[in-house]
Length: 109
Image 1: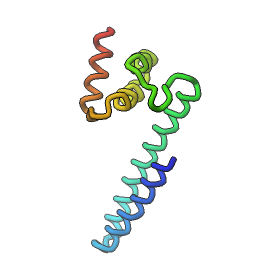
Image 2: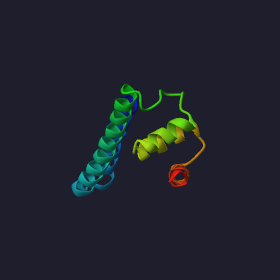
Image 3: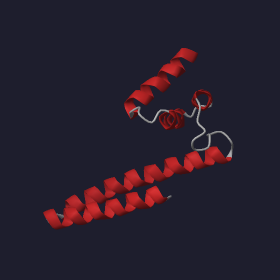
Image 4: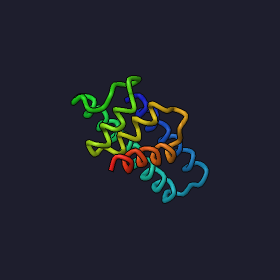
């Protein structure tokens, strides 16, 4: 939840800077709406992971394994499988993680 608060604070700061720099209320509104959509998406993803953890589907932080990634894929949680994969392989970028998880999925089919 602390990360969500940091995101909200950053949204407010970005909006304030744009308002001062441009004096354009339309641009400010666009930036704030886009930032709010990103923040809500992040919150939704965090709630989904918390829900899956509570049901014993998503592993606890630091305990992720390749088997967890495969299990999440088999249960239809591809986005969470990518997230789990990235937790396991911290040096991997998002695009590469998506490709690798999809490769796991196609190898199983």
